[in-house]
Length: 131
Ligand SMILES: [Zn+2]
Image 1 (tube, protein in one colour):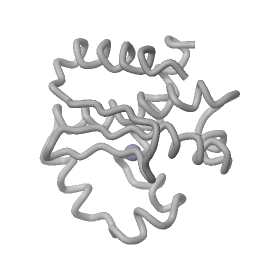
Image 2 (image 1 turned 135 degrees about the horizontal axis):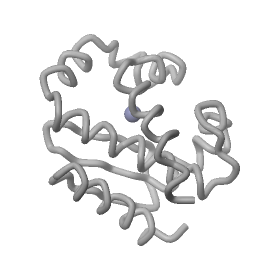
Image 3 (image 1 turned 135 degrees about the vertical axis):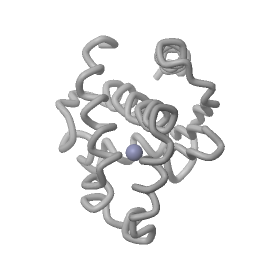
Image 4 (image 1 turned 90 degrees about the horizontal axis):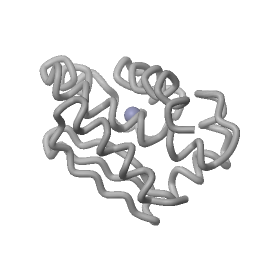
């Protein structure tokens, strides 16, 4: 995967939504996430490959290959940043209501959280723009 392309996508949404989000795209790591307080996206190519291989991404969207999985996932994380920028109180409240242990251990529980549903919807909508 060309990391430059993922950065290009990120730059587009940063400009479009006036975000200051710092985006760290890296090959290794056990997770991909958005940290609201730091306004920081950590994107691990290795972790997204794991999600793809496990069938998680295909279950969430019409993803046909790993490349599309990377694009879908950066769009998903960007939506978290957009959400936090637009409605920080709602975002924090939703996080507060999450069972943290379950959030990180149970993918179905994770995907059923409102912020996660919004992020997946956004990523599904925007995906075609970048294919
Ligand atoms: Zn998410």
